[in-house]
Amino acid sequence: MSRKSWDRDIKDFGNYLKLERSLSQNSIEAYIRDVTKLAEFVELRFAGTHPEGITYRQLQGFLKFLNELGMSAHSQARILSGVKGFFKYLLFEERMDKDPTALLEGPRLGRRLPDTLDYNEIVRLLEAIDLSTPEGGRNRAMLEVLYSSGLRVSELVELRIPNIYFDLGFLRVVGKGNK
Image (cartoon, rainbow, N blue to C red; front, top):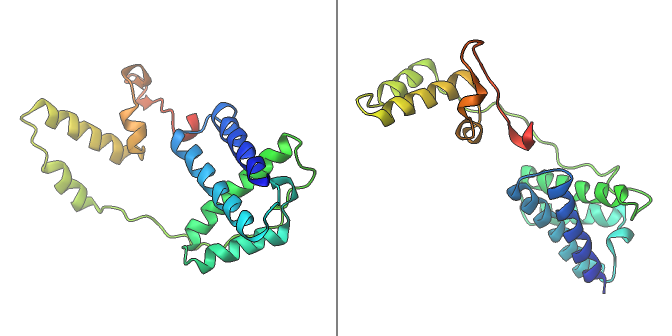
């Protein structure tokens, strides 16, 4: 019986993420996977527990379980983010009175800077493009926009001519999360 409750709440959560938060399908699927992992853990260890009945201690046990599986700290933190989002949703929908994840802390993550290309590597990359073809000119323009603006590739491919303001020297970009 409790698994049906989890399944219903997870389905409703997915609809909320799609309709209210306008997340991408990949993000929605990731959140659903995260919460499904929690539901499976609860079913194995605390059978009969509904989402509304989950406790802080049970969630700590879930995090310990993820760690024992050998998951990286980043994977654990991402799963915890999905689980926290689920319980915030349940609070928002007034299906719970208190958020059991409020005091839950994930693993410490060390931040590192992304790898970047140095100037000479950029020059070699741009010089390797065959400019004798229309595709070569397009590819060079795309790489120069990426390099000079810091856009994501997905933002570049969604870029449209009306979003380019040549006279003002800027682009209007709709980024991740429609921002």
